[in-house]
Amino acid sequence: MPRPLWTGAISFGLVTIPVKIVSATEDHDIHFHRVHLEDMGRVRTRKICEIDGEVVPQEEIGKGYELSKDRTVPVSDDELAQMPLPTAKAIEIVAFVESDTLDPIGISDSYYLATDGQVAAKPYTLLRRALERSEKVAVAKFAWHGRERLGLLRVREGAIVLHSMKWPDEIRSPQSLAPREVEVDDDEIERAVQLTGTMAIDDLSGFRDEYREALEAIIAAKSEGRPLPAPAAEEEKQGEVVDLMAALNASVKAAKESRSEDEDATVHEMRPARKAARKPAAKKTATGKSTGRTASTARKSAGGNAGKSVRKSAEKKTAAEKRSAS
Image 1 (cartoon, rainbow, N blue to C red):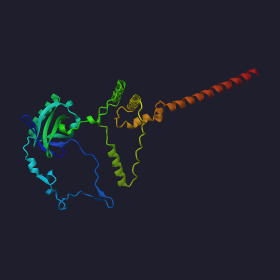
Image 2 (image 1 turned 90 degrees about the vertical axis):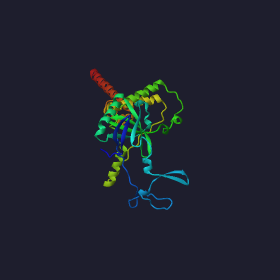
Image 3 (image 1 turned 30 degrees about the horizontal axis):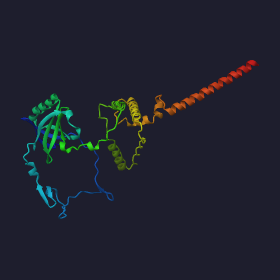
């Protein structure tokens, strides 16, 4: 089990469930050190007091709130820990709501709640089954990292998940960003809906971080003294969309062709196939579907061959008539 980030309890009415918070995600990012390029020495951030110019050790660093330019009030960790909050060491459930009533934009980090001792097993299971049977999620309040937070409790594969959430007043309104009203035909909407259906998938596990993979390849090449990987070819620039319906029709057709090539591929993996759909000359010739240029070439070739056959037949017929006349 990952190292617990917090220990406390879920407060569910008069029920108390001792739990530990563990991270529900892993960091797979590649992290760099800041270095001096001349000698590759590490460049570190030093914490220096702006009054005396001296480096301050970590144990002498505390929190301070600036009331004005000339006055700062110190606040210690002990004072924060002793605040009279019911959520100081508890995840207090305050309501239950339907999951589809919550806007995902308010959801922040995610954590698993693990039982803290055998005594927590029964009330933990009780809460989990109540959430499953009611098909609701729990809204909770808890204090963590120096502030009270809003949380969301739901069930995932038998474990209770805690999602840290934004407070309602922390979410900005998008009204000023919405475009002006424009007319969209029903046919265009239906075609767009058809495109979403064509591109629909049931599993996201096939997606991968291609940027990280490319970065790992660069690091491996540099560490082994090999040439760097060749840069990816630039995608063909798309022209300005003049006919929206034509663009939708082309998109639906390309998506269908890509899906038919590999039903098990994810949308992310199908990108090269969609490129092939934009330049289908070589690929479609192999499947018996030729492009306009290929078809035109085939017609010219067929026509030329047919003409040759007719001329040869006529020459043979003339020669036979001459022999008959003689």
